[in-house]
Amino acid sequence: MNSPKESSPLRRIVLVSTATVALASLLSLAAILAFYVAGATPWTGLFAVGLWGLPLAFLLLLVLLAMSWQERRRA
Image 1 (spheres, rainbow, N blue to C red):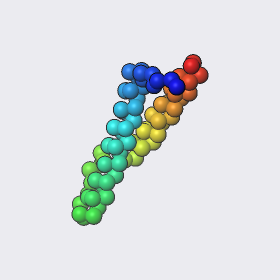
Image 2 (cartoon, rainbow, N blue to C red):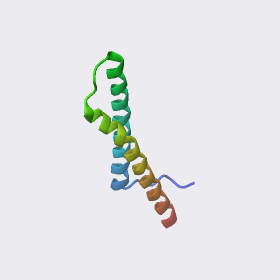
Image 3 (cartoon, helix red, strand yellow):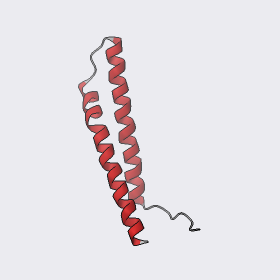
Image 4 (tube, helix red, strand yellow):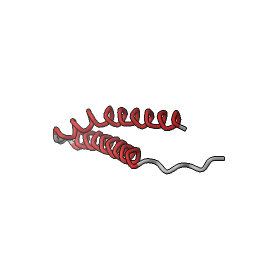
């Protein structure tokens, strides 16, 4: 059985940024919900992060998938 190969630095950067963007987006959506429950008006930046964060994380996930396909094709 083959041992797992070291991942490239670019792949690691994309992976960490994908997870960071997704987590930040989910936390901003939770904060918006908490503001509304508290009866306060959330900051508009939270809306932007919540609106654009998850689609951006999905696109980065597709980039990771394409990188994986390319790596397997080379092997």
